[in-house]
Each structure stands twice: as structure tokens, then as C-alpha cells.
Length: 252
Image 1: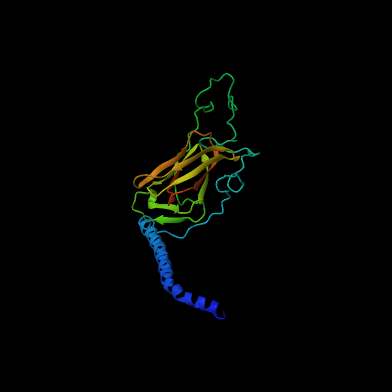
Image 2 (image 1 turned 90 degrees about the vertical axis):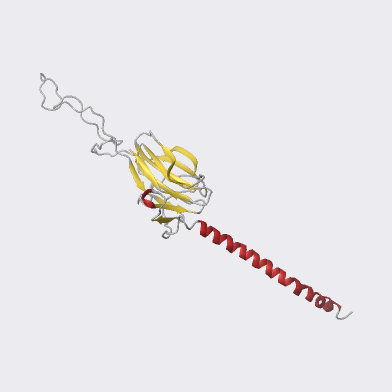
């Protein structure tokens, strides 16, 4: 019959109007819950990261999860064609001191301490403790700096990120390195690699920064007793709320 279809649609209008307030109310509740969760995260994270500057981006070359040796971060391991000065502790490729009797010594003369070459071992390079803002540390991703912290961190500052996949790297010369950060219930895991100057892996380990309470200046990763040389460390955030760098200790 003419008008039957129109009549059916008209009859449904009151039902649609009756349901519309419920749809709007449900949408408002979902939006309110989202805003409440966002505000709680901001409030709970504000105490330790209230003062921080804008995140810094690094141009370090790195494939997340797979360290790749490149010329930009790994210096060449080839020896210098020229003779180099021998530094304390001895660098690879340094010229060895001349052996045998010193020039001008008489054959009949008895070697003495004043003319014989020194046989004392070279003194080791002292250990260096580098702060998180050291220019040699490259941060990749959306990192920020938190300064003036009253929690016992080294120099009262840290670099931190909340984004999984963000990373840092550092190239050093020595026999080992310690990665120092804080432990906290909100901190998670990170994958750490150390490779030599040729890109060959030396150590790979997943470390955890979780703890029952906030503990500053904790060594969560350490590699020692390596042959003295040039190495690079990479660390990548995997989970947890925060990923933090407080200091690096380079062992000569």
C-alpha cells in the first residue's frame, strides 16, 4: 500500500530517539576513563621527572635490536702506518721500546739501572665515571633529561624515555664498562650488546631494572677483563614504564 514503508520508518523514530542518550552517555564515559588514566600516569610520573628539558634526538646509526658496526660509531681497527707515541697503559699498535744495550754503552760496562731500558709494566689508565649528559653518549628516540633530582642519582640528573625501542650507544676504549641506572617498580627490561671495533659481538644480555623501591646508582650491566681496545655498547628499552641512564663507568 502507498505510504506503508514511510510509515514504518516514521514509527521507528521514537525508538532511535530513546536510545540516542544512552549512546551519548556511553561515549562520554569512555572518554572520561581515558582522560582519567592519562592524568594518573602524568601524576604518578611527575615526582621524579617534574623538571626535564625537551627530548634529544641522536643521529647514531643503529638498527633496533640488531647492532650493526658502522664507520660513524666504530673507529677503524687498522694500525697506523706511522710510529706512534706509547701512552700509559699501552695502545694497540704502539711502537715497542728499543731492546738491547742503549747507544753509546761500553761493551765492558756493567748495565746499571741508569742506562738499562725500563722493564716496569705500564701503569693502567684510571677508571672514568661519565655522567648521563656526556657528549660521547648518543641517544636515539624520544629521550628527555631530568635535573635537580633529590633522589641520590649521580650529579642529581638522569636521561630517561618511556618509549619501547628507544636506545643509547657509547664507544669507549679500555678493558670494560659498567652501565649505571636506577631500579624501581616502574622500570622494566633492556637488551644490551657490546661489540668490538670490528663489529664482532663480545657480550649480549637482557637486564632488568625492577626493584621493590627506588634504588639510585645501581650497576645493572657490567663487562670486564676485555683485551684493551675500542668497543661500543648498545642498550634498547624493551618494556616497563621508564628506561633510564644515570652514568657509565669506563675501566682502563
